[in-house]
Image 1 (cartoon, one colour):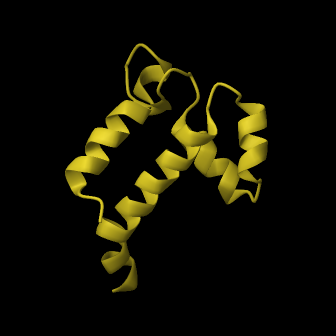
Image 2 (spheres, helix red, strand yellow):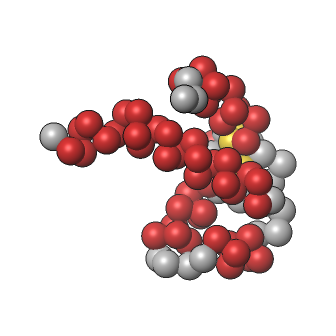
Length: 84
């Protein structure tokens, strides 16, 4: 099982927030692509491959890792609230 500390350490290397870059919106490290853009693509039913084609500065590994972090956060923190 992934620990909270492991998730935080991993997310720090994948997601960056800097007031000088897009006003502090969380972006994929090494890019100017907001993480929210990936979520919006998937919400609209677009495949991950289309997101990656449209934003080639984001690697498949980055996208999958961020989704894994989001999944962990949901399962660890949001699931009980949503179910209750």
